[in-house]
Amino acid sequence: MLARIPVHFKIAFIVLLWGGVVLALHLLSFDSYGINEAAARALLLNWSVADGVVNPIVVFGLPDLRVLLFAPLGIYWAGSIAAVKIFTLLIAFSATLMFYRWARRTMSEEVALIGSGLLLIAPLNFSQINAVGTGPYLLLLFALGQWLDQKYRTVQRHLGGWYFLQLTLAAVAVSLHPAGLAYPFSIIWEWRKNPINKQHRTHIIAGLLITTTVILIMRLGWPAMDWGNNPLTQLSHLVFSASPDSAAQSWMVGLVPAIFLAILLLSEFRRLFDDLLGRMLLGGLLLGAVAADPGWAMLALVIFLYNGVDKLIKINQSWSAGGLLGQRGLVLTVIFAAATVYMIADKTQRFNIMQGALAPEDEVIRTLTGELEDRKEPTATISQWPARTLLATRQSAFPLPPPAQDAQGLLKNLQGAHFLLFNPYDTKNSDLTRQVSELSNQLKTIMVMPNCVLIEIENSSRKNEAPASHP
Image (cartoon, rainbow, N blue to C red):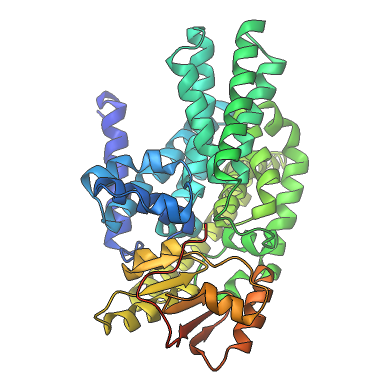
């Protein structure tokens, strides 16, 4: 009976069931806090275009090319955070579906089912959906990249629609994260080793190199990215969700999955490298380590859940024991343990959402929002996270000013602003932190949190106009 049901109806039923459970259990929050800074910039551009205004691109610079994917949100649901989260939920499911098909083709259906099931309940997956992070988008783009490469090879048409679609998706991937560079480089390597003919190879390699170079020049790299994060801290998200509790994000927690990941990569390196999608995951993991974040950690999670499960099944089978427990005892034990840990982490994440718990910088932004609610006049905030600040407060927000020579120069740069929001422990802000401490008589500290401080600018000579933008 089930075999007669078209596969598209089965997929639609599964996504509706999974999405309905996620929403019913309140695993997603629909407020304006916790959204990734880069995603916030793309959303603001889409929403402003829908309203006929494009000034965010002047203030914040060119956002990543998720702005193209967010276009329907700007047209039909401008200003709706719920629409953005549900859209990202569908992106995450689509990525899981494509990786299921990849694992079924390259490994086994058993690996595909187990890996995809665990990915759908992984706390890192939900935290990335809540943050509108790069992880689900990178995974989907990588999977689409492999599918498009196969399609282009089948069609064998020079400079056709499939070719330009491949270049477009490569541009989107590169704009998202340094890990996205694995997309064009993996395809270039594939065509260098396995071309249809010299002309096709030249077109693909030249097109991808030009596209990558143009995107990097246009965006000046990745301006909204945090560099130099400890990868071990980010790998702790493979076990726990990216919760406001910093204790769950210790590098010591990430050390255990890092050791197992290193062993897995050494044993599966050739297998990953010989497969186009596997090469993208491997390359993204290595290239993205310079800006390790939860989105980067999702690449490690996928390798764990698919290649790791496959390796585990082979180890269990090598014992040559009879019966279900003999053939799958180790596998069932590990799956049960992983599912239990994930469900506990998901429950903790749900509790944090219900309690309104936020990361330190979002807690400060929420405090700022409360301060602005009591003011009738328009205000301007200079923030290290300007797009997130604007999204939450609905008031003008600008990036941090360029370095000033002294405290008075900083005060001049802050003229016209009402609040200052930044991380005083960031090495990039060392001069700013020192100069702010010298202006204690004109700057009032309102709130101090780990890695974030909110300061009110008490300047009697403040002008009514907003400060100049500092892209």
